[in-house]
Amino acid sequence: MLLISPAEEKFGGVLSPYVRKGLPIAIGTLASYLIKHKIESRILDEEMVDITPEVLDRKLEGLEKPYIIGISCLTAHVVRGYALIKMIKARYPDATVILGGLHPTALPDEGLLEGADFVVRGEGEDTLLKLHNMIRAGATNYSNLLGITYWRDGQIAHNPDAPLMPDLDAIPPFPYHLFDEHKDRYDMGVVTSSRGCPFRCNYCSIRMMNGLTYRYKSSARLIEEITLLVDKYGAKQVLFYDDNFAFKKRRVKEFCDALIAAGLHKRCAFSIQTRADNFYPDVVPLLAEAGFRDVGFGMETGVDRLETIIAKGETVEMHRKAVELARKHGFSVSLFMIFGLPTETAADRETSFRVVQEMGTVASKYNNLIPYPGTPFFEDARKTDRIHISPRWSNFNSTLSVTRSIFDKTPLPYVPDTCSEFELKRDIVKYNLKTYFQPKALLPLLIGKKGIGWYQMPPRWYFKPVEIYKLARMAISVVLVNMVVTSLPLWLTEPFMNLLNPAMRRRPRLRDTPDLNYKGSSWSQESGTRIKIAAADSQLAGSGLEAVV
Image 1 (cartoon, rainbow, N blue to C red):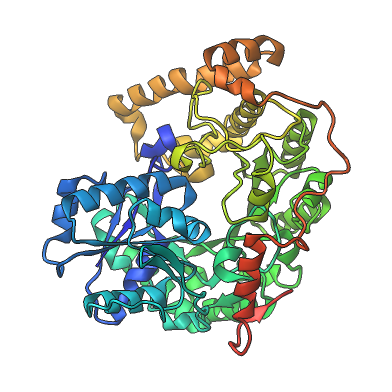
Image 2: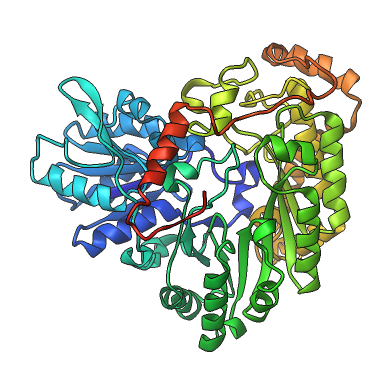
């Protein structure tokens, strides 16, 4: 079976050549599970190789026919995923195409209408294995296979959800060897140690996969994977891809003890992402002792009113204390921010930037809010005229931050009524530039260390005329132009930008002050999304999974 991770736009945009790519965890994990059950599996990551019919021919050569091809899609790349379905069907008419991932889980009908034969919803390992075996066996009746959407008698059929996997150790170790061909371009030092984040942020789509559960691998299993990365791939730093690494205090303590006992804390440094309210004061010293050096918090905004609207369940002061605690114990801290929240004003964005700067973090990034399908926020936003969905969701990405020109005409997915589209776009670019172009961010990058957003210059780049030319060209055509335009007064630039791109006039600023009565999503409402979440939560019964309700 061939498993594909599509990429509509390379990670990092124009800065892509200077970014070491993260491993496509989804297709790698699926491949490891299939291989464990004696199914030959190959992977194809479009971050590394542009997929053409000829590339498909080479990757599929020798696999059992008719081919079975799986495509894992996030919303940001589903436009490319749908294009690949058409490419595959045109070249191999008898191939079976299976879609999976967050976007197809949220909108399974759409995937079938775009040409897929099956959609695997939610966690895919066990469902994909069973589906593969049924296809190879020539099955004609799929009504008993949980977790799939498919065509039945000319109609779209949704089988009930599949149960979550209670034991993550049942999934084999990540198959790093499948990515050896491009190991010099990948950041191989990545591990996933848990699944889930049992909180209710209304913009986050991860609950479609996990409900309110939180599951994690055993310490022994994690030590095995990290030892492989250190011994075979020479990893000096390992990043945990978890949604919320530190949620379960007991497991973090056990894992830190295991790292220290194995001596890995002396051979490698570790980076995590977690919530500020899960960065426990009695655990942080142990994390530092065990080799953890970097932590990222999804603060999202520096305004408590906005934290409430997105159901974050945290405050600015919580983040301030978490950052202070982290720095006290030698951590470098990153804050991940979102601009364009409902009722957000230009003054709110300026406040958020100022709050981040006052905290003295090493890195921060300002993304535009994306109302992902399947989230409570999407259900609310779709009822307004402030959301814009380009064909096949092609504008639902977060590459705007610095990596595109201010003149790019791609519409933002969502704009609150307290600003215009250009005003929001301008602020996103402006505050990212203010973050990146500071000595503390630039100097490490220029001498070859990994910078904000994983940017890293090639070794001894300053002795390579071609690299100097490319950087100079980029600095003038993108950075300098963006800096000039975003520094000019809005009253001067907005009429000009709207003249260049009249479509931006469709979402003007409707109010100058926030609606203080705005309530946002309500978890007591019953929408299709919330029903799905309730169904996922029902899988907990008798499963031994942990949940917080």
